[in-house]
Image (cartoon, rainbow, N blue to C red; front, top):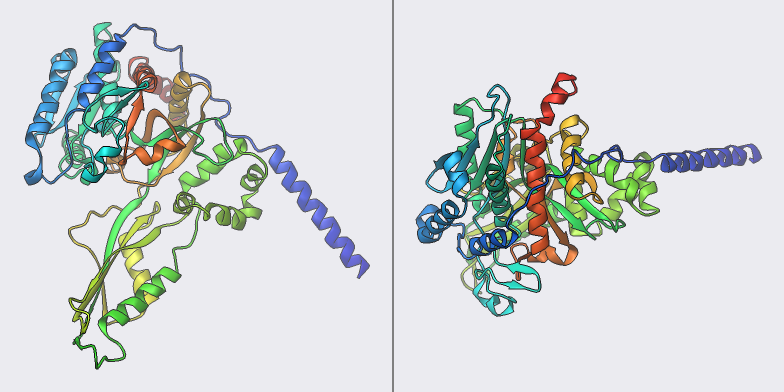
Length: 503
């Protein structure tokens, strides 16, 4: 017995020693990232740039299907862009895709190099009429209050669009010309799936045999106080995003009078199926972007989180438990499932002939519709229930993850560090959907990063009340895009590594 206790004690000491040793050696592979080059030195008319952003936010370019679009708002916004950025429209090739999505081509001096793509979208979500009196400034006013510009689209996603065009307009005024071509895609229907915008741009790329070396869209976040246990500014670069799937469950029956119910009627069968689904959420798993987040952000977390991330082989259950305490954390680690529509019945004393429920799934990378449907059928195990995807709802599988451990990502991290030197850079899984997902079939390096500083209190403003952007943060975004274009297109940092065989 003493020998057994001694063996257990030695094993425990060894285990603790290994955990401590791994924790002490736990460092982010991106800790050695340095600014890409010296910051771009130029002079821009800040007041004029701010006024352009303010005017951009006055156009109610609300996403709807084409037959419901406010054409005057969209046409007015495009006319505003042409007036505000004359050099861009005069010196770059401008393709209009499906009337409203714009594709700009700034041709490089070396056409043999695969181009870089910067993306954004200028369509916005609606504003609920009942919330208008709760805005500090009108949602389509573009007014400034205490150093912030207010308006729907200030964060999602007009500010990056205007910042990109402002950057190129100024680079053109300095006589700059890229070695590697720059393409700028500004979509008009991202909020409803991008089928008429980004999807068609990808088809145009395929027709022209364009395979971008790097694509950068919105999605990832520059934030402070957004990562528990990390007080510093964090730059979360999305290397993948979750997919989207809606599934309906249909139960048909004879119905009848409520005074003579059968044991299994449509609603009881449906609720039993829903109970089984709700009691069996998808299992937790560490996808590639989350693995990158653990490797790069974990070392900067406070104890004991850093210890757990340094020893996932031992503390994985604890990590899962900790993440599951918040909806956002749980969504990082599993394909989520939630009922969003339940219908059946027309009168309190009538058993309905048809009962229906809709579940929305947000899919981890690698998860597909067939995987979900098969799992539901096995879980419910009731052939009387029809389980099928909703045909008119958008579907995209969890996107393919772009690498976070190669030179392209490291260079992007260097560009981020140039503009935001104190930021901790990390890969990230984007929980929502962006137009970037449509480009993963034509480019290996598709990333998502919105260079606008957000605090925890700003997250509800996205698609919510009092959406706004700080004036200084908008100007910093312009500097970021200037640095990005200089590094990847004008200086052509990619080719330097291609020559060395690193990419």
